[in-house]
Image (cartoon, rainbow, N blue to C red; front, side, top):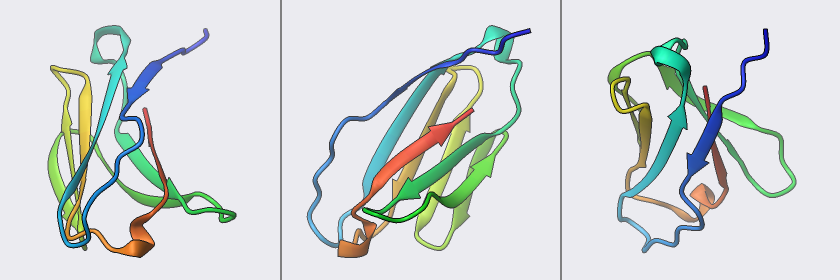
Length: 94
């Protein structure tokens, strides 16, 4: 059968260098019946880069913190102490 998930993400975000930035991802999904939430980034003229994924709760990797709340069907990606190289399009995937 078809598995169509609607995903709503943050629009453009600007941040001061050295601050933390949070990206929100909200999705609707039948009865929470999905695996992990994945986050990627894509810098201009480059390919998609995998950041991290998790099924539930909070995980950290380098300057990234990723949390998934299955009850709320939402995920937050925090980029800590933002640098110029963090300029990119961020995607969440369910």
